[in-house]
Image 1: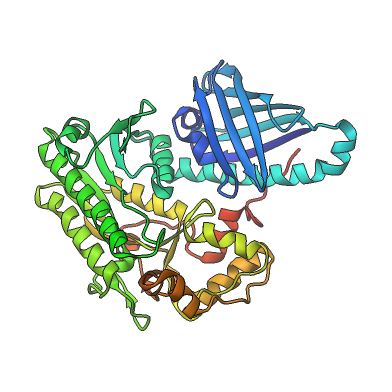
Image 2: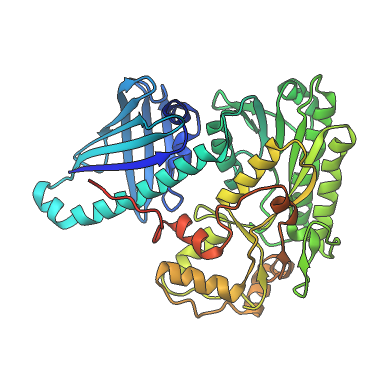
Length: 461
């Protein structure tokens, strides 16, 4: 079976090929609706490079061992499967110039299924459909990433909280844009791009920060991972405040500190008031989350006092099937048991993972960006609308609300300040600073994240 997919890109062939050679390209291509674990990789995309990974498809664990062959500098590389779910697999990636500053990226796949012609007759249509879905996503991502910035960036970005949902995606985006990303980890390093650190000895980080173009802090224990016992609240505060304090202390000690510090924050700062729209000028609310976020931001702004441009990333509900709220809701909605959580009239201020990392990269590169920014989509939705839209995209009913008393019984105070909170938050400063949302509306965001009914047509030849 032979399939060919093409996409026109308003960037030169050299730029498109260079994008594929940078760290993070594989992660940018991985569809969010399929969990993929990289076991090992070496050698990049040049001849002899290798990649071992496992794809999780429901109960199935599909192993792939890929070797790169037939490399032509600036024009072509090829994947050949030494082990895969297919009987044979060969994927040629190549680029052709199409005039000044433009090119066509071409993917040619040749494969055969176990079971020969019988398998092709039974499964060929489904395989083609899945390939269409995959390459529609890949080509949309490639085109958007390359055309989003006028030229490749450079310099070292130090990233704390790199192993989380947002941190992992951000590292891949920044790498493909040309930055060298150094990941701070609280264990022994396992890769060349990792650097061990301990908040108790922040001075050890000063050399890593010296000469960097940015420090990004996304660290902190998960707000909704556990019930809020007294011990858990202490852990939530310590993971944010102590980590931020340590990073700011290291900034102050660095001989040549990075010119910008971007630090995670949350719209929980505004408290819960469903009767009003809130932008970055909104007052601080009440409750544990509001107080925690206030103190967290205060520690981050000490970097600004030291002369480092500081950006506070007040983030809403980040949507991704790989984790967070959407990741937890999907199994329930897929079996038709989903519905509004608690009060369906509550407002949800959400943002897709792509826009979350896109906004962070935008603010990093914009010299005039300083202070607080709401990282939320411009179109908040009610809980009822969210459940209805997710059910529509999945083709499932979404009629069974989760009762409020049950949520409070299980989650306690956390339920009222997270799951049952109602917030209509607007990204006023982000829009004013020229950021263009990939997913301003919920329906398009869910279709993109779940690979359903994509708008960009791709036809196999």
